[in-house]
Amino acid sequence: MSNKRISLTRYLVEQQRVDGHIPSQLRLLLEVVARACKSISQAVNKGDLGGVLGAATTENVQGEVQKKLDIIANEVLIEANEWGGHLAAMASEEMDSIYVVPNRYPQGEYLLLFDPLDGSSNIDVNVSIGTIFSVLKKPEGHTGVSEQDFLQRGAQQVAAGYCVYGPQTTLVLTVGDGVAMFTLDREQGSFVLTQENVQIPPDTKEFAINMSNMRHWDAPVKRYVDECLAGTEGPRGKDFNMRWIASMVADVHRILTRGGIFMYPWDKREPNKPGKLRLMYEANPMGWLVEQAGGAATNGKERILDIQPAKLHERVSVILGSKNEVERVTAYHREA
Ligand code: AHM
Ligand code: MG
Image (cartoon, rainbow, N blue to C red; front, top):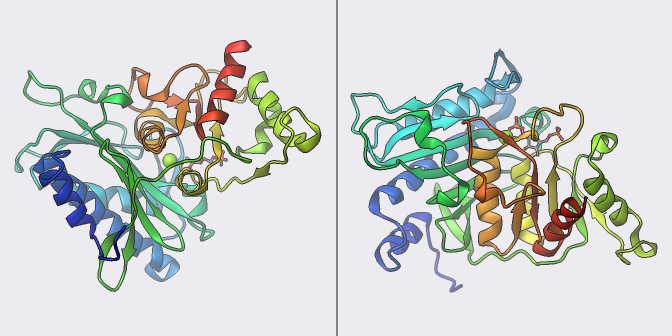
């Protein structure tokens, strides 16, 4: 990369004009999402000084107690995106049903899905959290918009990304042309391109999983982790390191930066649920980013991006990161 500073705006304009990757409405949409992330970043930064920490008195559709910041981030994303004319509707982890752009605004052709504040359990303890988003095109051929329009496979995404609010605020984006990272320059108030063509090394010595659930895991996951723990004396012949931040954004950001494998598999605690994480606004955008960086993402059986969603808030088992490791865990599932 040359030493000239490339802003997100310029990057997107070039993606649109020179490379023809994105139409102007999609460019506008991504700029608006980035602007919303800046404002969420401000709120996160203020913490207790802004009165944003702690629980709200409400629950979301998954029955989880909402944090004040979950609600604030959700509102920021909706207010930023509803009037620009680029969207038909939005869906969020924090809303039971889809939010159709009100009649007073023009309707666009895109659908935006998000987890406004991922890693909610880390908000109050000052650990990295983030926003995850996925963009789909509304299917053609009918007017109006319904939940059915959202039920598209992850492979249909036209843009995906996340913004991690950590020591730096970093926006990570793909429009299907590799993965680019932009760091927020607070003085300038703009996202600046800091890494292009992000690549995840195919092999790794680092795994991420919530080990406290070990007794509830399925045999293939247990086998994989046991082999990692056996270190140099075990079948892998090398020592592994472990990280678990409990914010998927932060764990995936580490994997995009230095490799690794992340797993939130199905487990026996709630056998009827396919996993904890949500397919459409967590696993799909992260899965696409990881694939675009040369990694892999499966649910143990099939590619995440090939799963046909049956409902908006569908959950899924997630195994993603360094390609060879993900393939190994997936092969263990097949053998079982
Ligand atoms: P959230 O969207 O309600 O914050 O939940 C998702 C988060 C992920 O970011 C993270 O990987 C996982 O939940 C952590 O779960 P656990 O606390 O069970 O380890
Ligand atoms: Mg989440």
